[in-house]
Image (cartoon, rainbow, N blue to C red):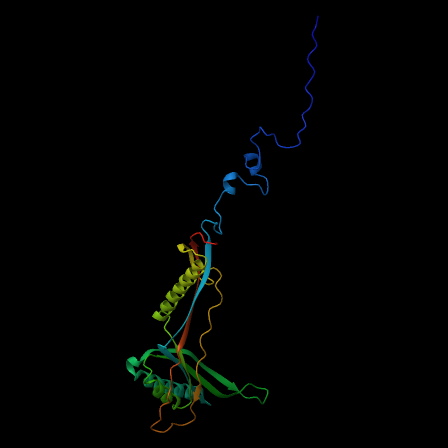
Length: 272
């Protein structure tokens, strides 16, 4: 007698996860699903602080004024003649006189540099053929003055030279001036003071510094434009008087600004 095999079990239909299974939102099976992370990732650090360790973010600012340290003066020496060689000779002589005058002030002038030099022909407007009517020559000098007591006399004497243009002065601080460091330190102290005031208003205190950064350190903007130079003085044809009354120049105070962003961890506030 042959015994028939038992019938197959009925199919199992599930409407949800098996409570006895290890699969779930925090299991490896769900780790690859979009929007579902592992339990360790879900328990990661919170970037914005916690009720037990809240964070406070502040901005520190400092706006200070300092006396200028240097003054820049731009000198343009010109020459004009119907002959190229004559124009060059006149330009060479006038440039030499300007350089000699500036160098005569010794250590009062921190730097003297020659910038652009040009000689170009001037063509006549009439006629079909190109004809040179005259030649124009220019040399541009830059002088950085540290002793302001001679600045008025120097600029006046330069402006008294023949066919010479003087622009300036442009007051400034040196790039490595201690004034910039003073402003940055003041901005940091302002940030700490402001953060303490916020924490104190909640009955808490600062615990640790989380971040300190210059404003715009990650996305720095365009550098500030330099200050515009002062007035322009032009000399005419022929020499001036033997003695020239020096200009009275008052140095312009320089404004230095510093900004920082700071984040602190503070103790748990008292909200009663």
